[in-house]
Amino acid sequence: MANPVLSHPRFHDEQAAYDWVEAIVWANGRICPHCGVFERSGLLKGKSTRIGLYKCYACRKPFTVKIGTIFEDSHAPLNIWMQAMYMLCSSKKGISTNQLARTLGVHLKTAWHMSHRIRLAMDESGSDPLGGAGKVVEGDETFVGGKARNRAYREPAPKQAVVSLVERGGKVRSRHVPTVTADRIRPILEAGVDKASHLRTDESNVYLTVGKQFASHETVNHSAKEYVRDDVHTNTIEGFFSILKRGIYGYYFHVSETHLHRYLAEFDFRYSNRVALGVSDEERTDRAIRGIIGKRLTYRQTVDAAKAKTAQ
Image (cartoon, rainbow, N blue to C red; front, top):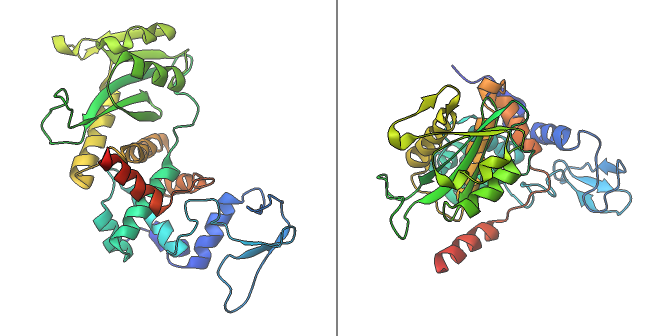
């Protein structure tokens, strides 16, 4: 059965896509991105005029809703962008660049860059801390990349370390760290978790000192085959790690250290806006669209970052 959401005009008609994005980005009124003047612009009309083009009556400059967003300077039609965003938002374990390119009918490089821009829009790392009074936050680390077998502790490590924090029944935040040490973990926990929260981790000593800052800190001893003791466990975060790894190994196969933070933002976003929290695929896509504002990522930036990392 065809997905009824994908029959919406915004996925097939560029004008409808512009109308949809404008309704979200300019929910409180149209603002000129050049001079910041509010509601002093008009839509330009004409046979050769671009769709969604406005002119500001204050600075006399033209603009569209794409300026100052991940869509700026993109030649892909906005309805194609809407399709790409829906596909990344509704695919639980991600979607490969090859599949995205084939489905959208665009060049492989276009699909690759579009997906990275969308991941930037998904980034919620600057949001409020997790947890709060009476809430439980689990913390743990894992390793992704490299070969499938666990070689996390060999030097140099072929896998990349990821530290995640998940609020039970809530959101998750993940960070890539060069090494798993107390000095690396402390600022992540201090900035990412409300001090009134109850912290639950494994027996790793990297959490011992910083754990004293929270309402309580309890651990489970995995090395002694202890996994659950009353409400003390890390099963929630292990469940998130299983989704993350199935996506990385099963769909993306290889994720470079340069772009790992964007892939983490993608998996965090879908988990934090999941069906269990009452968020449908359509609403999840709308939330991703709200995240496009003020974010730019050029193709040159992504390529140069990868080259710089390779040259190190």
